[in-house]
Length: 350
Image 1: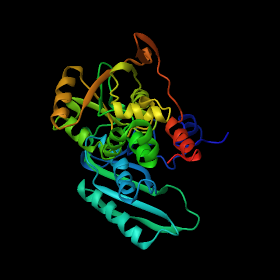
Image 2 (image 1 turned 45 degrees about the vertical axis):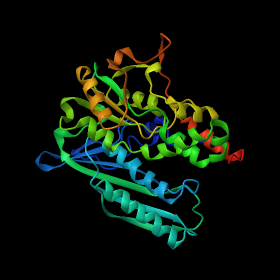
Image 3 (image 1 turned 135 degrees about the vertical axis):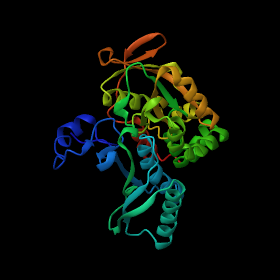
């Protein structure tokens, strides 16, 4: 069966990848796992190294600056789930053969700028120009951070009884990219104000500040786990965190933060905001009695945050409450954003 656009599904990963990851080494605490943003290697003297990789973007409809921003921050978001900022970066660039030296200079200058702003030292990689390369994926990046083993968070550490918090809102990255890619359509169908709001939300895609503000100096004492929202949206990310931590969850649909701009733009593309790509939002679990404190701290730093549910025992399952009706949360293997994006391209939407 032919795979659809987007990340490989969990069954595909389990069948072809999970048990074929090269040599087993005892110092690898966390290798490739469903719902876990980082790999963790234990080092001597109580230290640990966390690593994360993601594609690099080069999207003509967005532009060089925005593509570079995505390239840096989507990987940085994964590292942010540890409670620490990224420190080192490796970048592999496989660029179109017709990509000009002038455009390369601009793109790389932005990569350098965004890495510098959040403290990433670029330590190496590979750069090449490839004949026939027309993809919006221009290669891949790996970011690394070092910290003490007992201070590092992962999505596996969520515990029953924890409150589930969501920063900012649903579908931030989906809506921003759709508005920038199909500006005439979004303006005509939602109005100029929503179009501009959607475009401006592009630079809300980073969750590094969300993570560092939430953890503060407390680390595991209050925040127990974090998970970056990507494909599958906010609901998909909560599902992944529950699976990664071997727990259940209960989520209240009417508490999910969806602002009007995100709702209106998603409506144009027949998308549900809670289920589509949502970079810019962080899922945070914490002890119930400190949820309001963490929310207040985030909001004091201009980061909205909402309590949407609770981590439960695994035996309870992963439940969604909609209008007082409880049902099993559906996990969609493929994010509906991709079909909507390519459908709009095929229809010639501008």
